[in-house]
Amino acid sequence: MREKRGELIAVSAPSGAGKTTIIKKILERYPEIVFSVSATTRPKRANEKDGVDYYFISEQEFLEKIKKNEFVEWEKFYDYYYGTYKSFIDRNLNAGKPVLLEIDVKGALAIKKIYPDSYLIFIMPPSYEELVKRLRERNTETEEDFKKRIERAKMELSEKDKFDYIIQNKDLNNAIEETSGLIKKIINKEI
Ligand code: 5GP
Image (cartoon, rainbow, N blue to C red; front, side):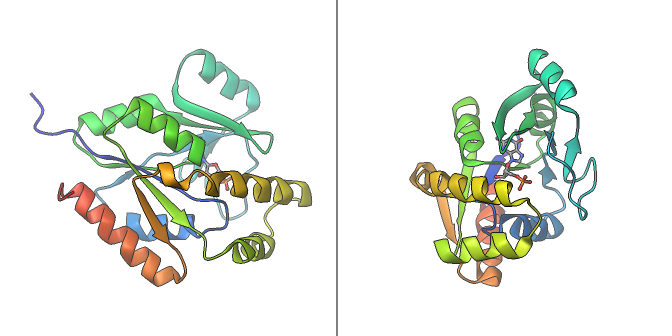
């Protein structure tokens, strides 16, 4: 029999809340945590790597994977698909490894239903105005994508109370320390 199952941790936040930066730091600090690389049909950004940030696949491939039940959950938004590989999560959890998901709010809530022992963490942007400013400055999206992301952010903020933990990202370094401390406790089974 296996000694222990790994912990499943989902981190969500509206685009531009600083989530990716926080997650990158945490993965550097705790190399034992396995990052779940999702599949997406969104075009790759210049700073992203296939197989590291996402598996960038075609819509046709994505639809085939849905049919074959390869995703534990998937979502379509901004006209693009995003999905979490079920086999990847289960293989690592069964091997006793903690698995971290960077996932949207709906996806996180779907994960909680399937894995009731999972931990859901929500990162709050400093303010709505700051969120808009950051999305503007990032300038990685078309104007249309930008508008959809703002709309989505509003919806996501309204769901935050369904999460187990909420981290305020008023100051990035504080948010990194707070999230890191929380995740350390989770993987050490102190909470
Ligand atoms: P982005 O395009 O900025 O990388 O991601 C857009 C949104 O999709 C983010 O909220 C991100 O967390 C979410 N996302 C990434 N991977 C998945 C996934 O596998 N499933 C779901 N439901 N959302 C995902």
